[in-house]
Image 1 (cartoon, rainbow, N blue to C red):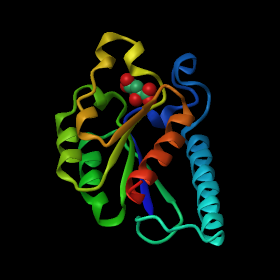
Image 2: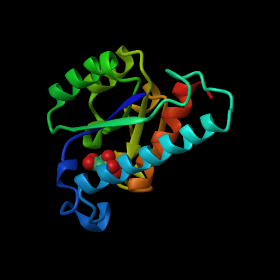
Image 3: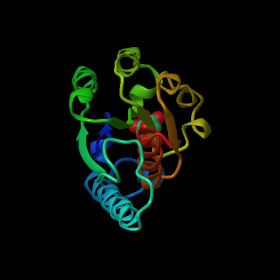
Length: 167
Ligand code: DQA
């Protein structure tokens, strides 16, 4: 299965951006770590197939989990990317960054597509400034993972794969 990992505004600056809040890992390093996790997950899935386990309902028995990464600072480009994603991917892992708190255009794009979207945040947005506690995306997403840095993305991979597998 092919999954899109989408990152919104200012996440290209990870590593140097407010390191006390977001840590020192760059977006590139984060993406490599999440890609490595998906590779390990694919190997575990292949091992289950070798053991003769029942296949999942996803897009093929124990198929590989392939991740594709994209980041943009531009709302319209992100709307286009979400609209087009359902042609190529079976799900989206999405950190909408600041758009989380106000972009109805991006919320509507998520609601308009038929593939599941998992909302991801590095930080716990419910425990920061009050304006960050509101997510206009949350109720149109299939799930959310927050507050665990890069681990939030790995948790989202597991959650999304489980949804697509029909578990
Ligand atoms: C963020 C939280 C948002 O409030 C913020 O605007 C970001 C990053 C996070 O990953 O914790 O840019 O989405």
